[in-house]
Each structure stands twice: as structure tokens, then as C-alpha cells.
Image 1 (cartoon, rainbow, N blue to C red):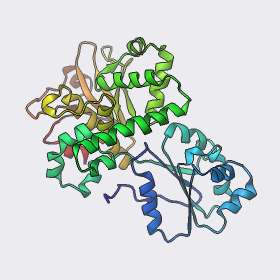
Image 2 (cartoon, rainbow, N blue to C red):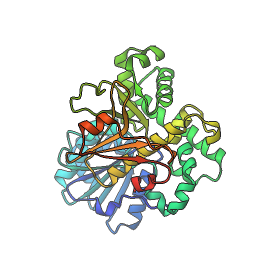
Image 3 (tube, rainbow, N blue to C red):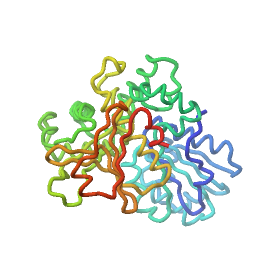
Image 4 (cartoon, one colour):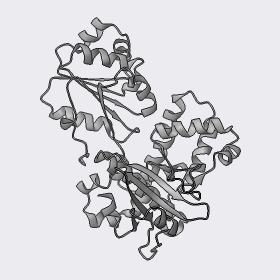
Length: 374
């Protein structure tokens, strides 16, 4: 088993609920079960899919809820988002049995966050489990092998089942099922969305525009929805861990574009499954976009692991000067340009250099990208 970055032994805490978010099939249950198998605490493991558990933890009946957890040192609830009123149920446990350790997992940040957010204010710790990161894959590959397999990661991504799949067709089958049977079903169930075909068409448009600024009006016109509905769908897709939104960076330079956003996919394999495009590099015209999406998603994972409070943006001016990624941390700026070929040495944009002379600027390519991600 490839070791995950998070060590739950260091994250659990009495009087606080550890919430593990993340998309389906990234290994939340595996991570939880592995921890429980090693734990010396007397534990109880249940699932939010269990109707009886839903009735008890959603009841707000103090006596029933306390009795349910009585004589246990640790309570673990998998798929906790399935339980109506789970936030209040967990609050009762935290307040009434402060020595109890509690872990709850959920596949949808949108759904579970709404249910636990307010009741557990000050009583929870949250982590997001992503598909495997390059850091985690050092358990399976060395740095040379990671570079050798870069094209595989760009095409098929790094969901656990994909990483261990024996052949190309198996990877394609897993990703196709993941998109059609899990991710989109979760999204559609969140707000009882009925126009599934329009939602999928919207996702396809985003997939073809990875790395480019998106016009909401154009999207709305193409999928035949109003702009407000498009905004709502994009927000749900983001909160369901399918896509990631990034805004434009500006410090009031008139030329800077801030009105539009870019969208990336959390996983390259999911992006390619959405458009049914698994061709090899030689037969593709989107390798630059794949590399950019990969680096952005991996950097996001890395910042999360290191608990870096880092804001991420793109930068562009109306006259066409641009930078792929700008990171702002503790008032300091770092700018990164993503170019798969090391021969492509794009110069630092003159307006950026003039406006932000103290900012660092670096080109990330096939040769140095692991240093950027580690």
C-alpha cells in the first residue's frame, strides 16, 4: 500500500472532530481503516449509509446519542454526509463526551460542510484527501521513474485505482466509471439537478478551456442556460472536487485582467475522461494544457500538505502579457510560468517586472518540475 501523506495519529484530538473531505475513490475509507487497524483505542466504526446510524445521530436525542457512543474511546463515521443533522449529532458527542475521539469522512465538501459547519465551529479540524500526489508516489517510484512516467500522469492522472491498474485499458475503464458513476452522480444529487446533459456539456467546455480564461456569458450561451445557473453549476463542481477555480491577480495596474477566471481539474485523468480523450502524446494538441493542469493541481496538494496559507492566481494584462501562476504568501509574491519543453525560455513580462520588482519569477519545465512540487 502506498503510504498517504496524512498521519491520522498526529491529527486526532479529544474534544474535536477530525473531518476528512475528498472526492470519491481517493482512499478516505482505506486511510481510515488503516489507522483503525493500528489504533490502540477502543473504537466503533459505522457508516452514514446505515439507516439506523442516520436515525440515531440525526435525532438530536441526547440520551440516545450518548448511549450510542458509550464506553468507546474513538468513534469513526464513514460517509457522514449521508446523515441529516450530522453536525448537531457530533456537537452533542463532543460537548457531552469530551474525552471521545471522533473522525468523520465525507465525499462532498459542499454537502458535509453545510451539515457540520455551524454546529462544529471551533470543534473540528479539517483535511482534504486528494488523488495521489507526486510526493506520495515517491513510495512507489523514485524521482527518475516519476519523470519517466510523466506522460502517464498527464493522461491518466493519479487516482489510487488508476495508479495500480495493470494496463492502459483498465485505466480508461476506471476513469470512465469514475466520471459517469461517481463524480457526476454526486454532483447531480447535491441540489437535485435535473439537466444532467447540460451539466456534462458545461464540464466538457471547461475541459477544452483548461488554462484559458473563461467567459461565463459564452458558456451560458453554448449550454443554453442562464448565467446564474452556470455560476451555480460551476460552484457545485468546484465544491465536489471536480474542478478548481483560480482568479486574476491585480494590484490596481490598469492593464491587469481580474474580471475573468480560469478553471482546472483536480485530476488530469478525470479531465480526459470527460472528453473521452486518452490518446498518446504524439496524437494530442493539448499537452501544454495537460502539463499546466497537472502542475497546478499538484501544487495545490503540496500547499495543503504543508499547511501553507498561500493564495493562487493567474496574471494577465489586456495587451497579452501573462503568467500562469502567481502565489502570494505572507506578503511575498512568486510567479511561475509552465512550459513542458526546457527549450521554451519565456522572458519575464516587462509590466510584471516593472510593477512587482521584488517578486520571484521562474519557468517550470519537464526537467525541474519535481523540485517545484516537492
